[in-house]
Image (cartoon, rainbow, N blue to C red; front, top):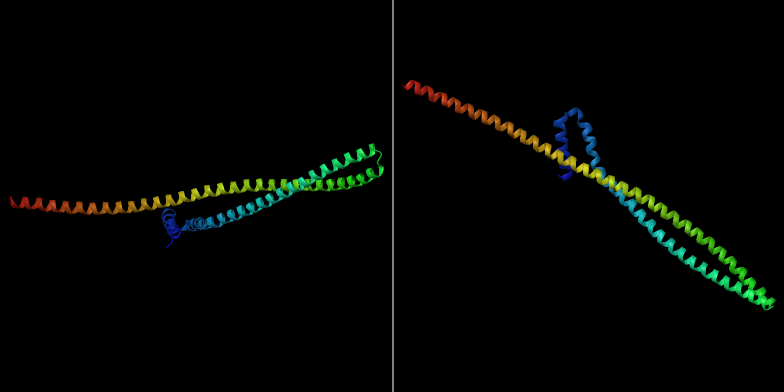
Length: 203
């Protein structure tokens, strides 16, 4: 018999002795909750795995954000350089060169704007993931603390049941000893009475 089965049987016996058969069904329903502890812990572990997967997604999103931010900054530096070249060409009255450089600058500006939008989208995505992680981790930690609290209470119930069982066993043994002592005392008293009667008869 498994330890949990023995504990359930012990609790059933003790509760039956304390409350009687009419309340045993209520106690039995409480005992059945013991088997749910493993299932709840399994759900907590599954939730933790989902959070770990979300952290991996966050790490990937941060990596993409850094890469796009780098490309954006590179494009901005290129745009700044092209704008400076356009100004120099205009000052030198090189209109055709200035026109070509301006076309390149316009293209660079478009690329920079697109990358800026992508950076903002990545920031929103990573921010959303961080918020979800923080919220879910807080809830999970709260559930784990509650699980630990309930586990401690359950262990206390088991210990109390064992103590009650030991107390009942000791009470039963004490009652038996008292009965045996009373019978022994009665036997001694009868022998003392017989000896006293023999002394009176022998006088």
